[in-house]
Amino acid sequence: LEKYFEYNAYPSAPDRLLLARKSMMTPRQIEVWFQNHRTRARKDGLPLRKLTSHPLPVHVSLEALERSMPQFTIPAFERQHPERGVMAKKDDLVISKAQVGNRLFVPPLSQIELFSA
Image 1 (spheres, one colour):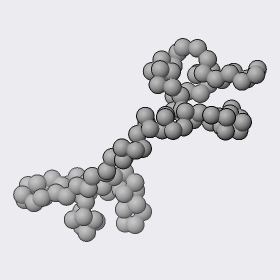
Image 2 (cartoon, helix red, strand yellow; image 1 turned 90 degrees about the vertical axis):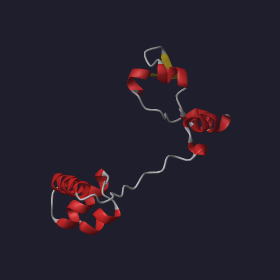
Image 3 (tube, helix red, strand yellow; image 1 turned 120 degrees about the horizontal axis):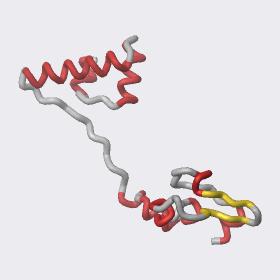
């Protein structure tokens, strides 16, 4: 834990879980251990190292996904107003927004629709 603390004083939840498994402790014990060590380091005036997660690249934005794969996304208006109307209709099959929930990606209704765009 000391070595990892030098590397990153703020482990993520998955990292805490991994550290807990390796040290035979619970994730909560790991969390408290790191909290106590951060407090002690601050008190001693030591710098704390925090690894940051990098944001998604610009080309992986939601807007880019909507433009490149419209058949897999719910239009922005429908995401903002899920209570309005039917989302998809094919023959007698109707999928309402209530059935789909708040998912962003919806599979195409058929392979034909996938390649017809």
